[in-house]
Length: 127
Image (cartoon, rainbow, N blue to C red; front, side):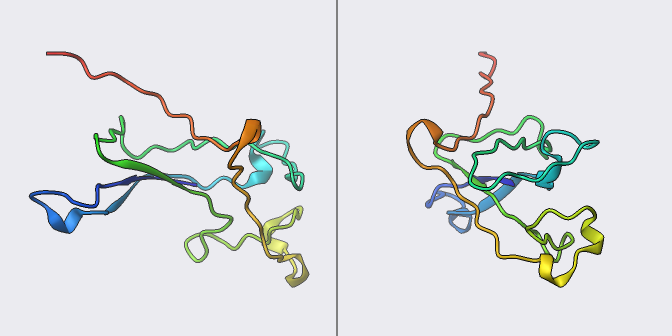
């Protein structure tokens, strides 16, 4: 999962920065470890899951007025990280060719099950 600061399309004195996408946080978490590293479990199909974004590369991360927040959810960062077979296997390093399947990631976009990102809002100290 990646959290990205998307700059405004027009950036005044820095036109080359218009629309720039700055990755401010990124994390790789195998879904099997979403609840516990000592007790891995497969992700149930077709059920909504919450996943924490643990790493934040800028502390604190400031999204300026006029910027947007983008979230990218991926099932693999190959070749930066080992391939994800998209099926539950006891040890991913011994996955067989038949274990590799096409993944579908669904972002829930409405109603009470809508996907969301929860970010803390910190007010700047007044001068």
